[in-house]
Length: 187
Length: 187
DNA sequence: TACTACATGTAAACGGTTACATGATTGC
DNA sequence: GCAATCATGTAACCGTTTACATGTAGTA
Image (cartoon, rainbow over all chains, first blue to last red; front, top):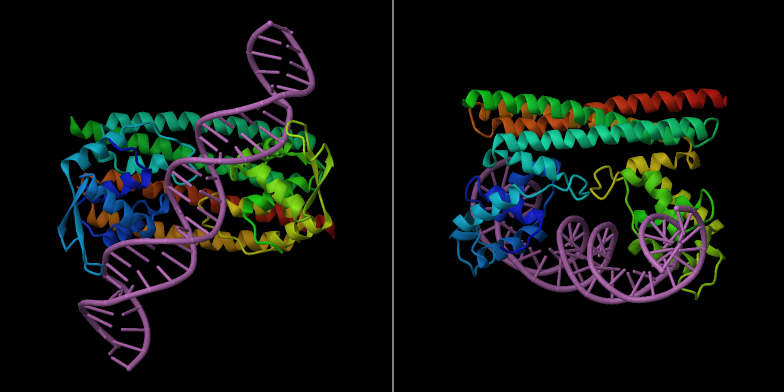
């Protein structure tokens, strides 16, 4: 298996919903994972070329040589395998490029539900640690920066950290509940 | 003025709190803006070199030629000017590299309080629009994806968007209140 | 006719990350 | 003496963004 970027696999995952052109892929990603992982044509077209070269996808309509004709690509078996393999790889929760957790949860139908729940629990744990760290920083600011011109500006950033992380913790709980319910439905 | 990256100005802003070495800058950024803007030595040292070359900073201790001696840099008047100029430039709220709004609010003591409030109000407006968009997407999913295997996985990502944005809206309100209080204290 | 959306593609530039090299200082 | 931390620096690499080039199809 070739080592490839997350963007490579997100394109592969989009193709896994059904055959698409580069243009369709862009629109599709904008409507689905676009809020937490962005792609542009400068990445899509070269990646599509590599995918065909490496047999992760095949051209189903359009001519390979023509430059302005719509070309539709279909994922291959090898492509599906590589995509599913990538899905179960560990997540970098701090990737500044985009939200890997959300991307992999979005494609969760190709992964055991229990694994998605486990990921959410792992992430919730990290959030709780982070929240404790933020609260410690807040106390430090209140001790060392009280009366300082910087006080309010430091508090603004710390409160952002606390409030968004608190929301993520609640989101984890909601998602875990949602997936547990589905786990129950299946049996 | 030279066009420079946000990282350049964040380093300049850190230096604006007081003279520091490259090592200090790294530690300082990790403790302050590190949660929403990361830097590493591969950026810091070359940038510091440029800063001295362009007169944004000067070396106050240590020899320019030595390779393993601690070097402390101090921001110049030109550096302060460039930093303040950058601070008032429009923000790209969608920069995936880091959170420009948080960075510029953090350095808010060098900007009129009213301008920081205005920025928060502008951002809150964008959040409200985004929330409306998310709620529309949620309705679309409920209409078109009900009973679909993808339903829960799409809901997970949409709910993340809704819940984190809701937290950001509340954060904006809290920050606006905080800064208004300070505006009152000044008079 | 002109505008908009559809559609593909490349090259250069940009910025950030990683790996590596080197050495000084502090505390056990 | 050894480990950890302090400390500076470069080069290669990687992935994303931007600018540019080109052309088609539908519609007002």
